[in-house]
Length: 279
Image: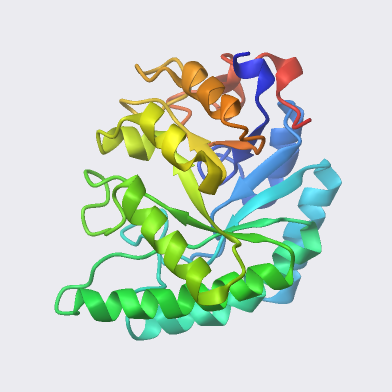
């Protein structure tokens, strides 16, 4: 058991950001990783030119890296936004414009997990109206994901860093997952279990794993405090991932941490090079 028994992927939107986007897959491969994930890379537009999509596909292919997770358009991320799908008006429209673009790109690179960030509460907007809009958009996203053989992920964030985001507990995200599955009948909505965010919310991580592993479609980690690499904080990440594996979770674990003051390639010393390729 332990880290070498897990299957990891690298989030190229938080690691290797010292490099241009198209150079990051090769850098991850040079560090020994074969699987990567991304936030929506074009924060200014939900519908980038096809040439830019093709260039990213080529960069992934040339590096021999498999894209295993992709966010739908989520507004300014990194930045003030935490998603677009529950934000009435232009942002919801932008999310909808992105759904088929993101799904088609995922299909083109064999990516089977699409993450839909819920979006912040908006001052002056009725939370019930936002939640109804969210469900409507998540149903559309789940159907698009299903069309390309992918799952739809719903993520809990943490309240200290995302005070306007309504899904700041595991049960809150699970409730949304269940509503989407009930509305579509597809069963492809899953929980994105991020141990860093859940720990920041003060949740009992072992209990969350036990309660929701069966509904979990993807896992992400960073240590706490600091959102750094495993070993830079106090979370028992190795033990928690073992607990997750004991539940039968066999999916990938996304490395979504900040490398600190060093180059990203130097932040993986906690993981033996032989354990970095997704087996």
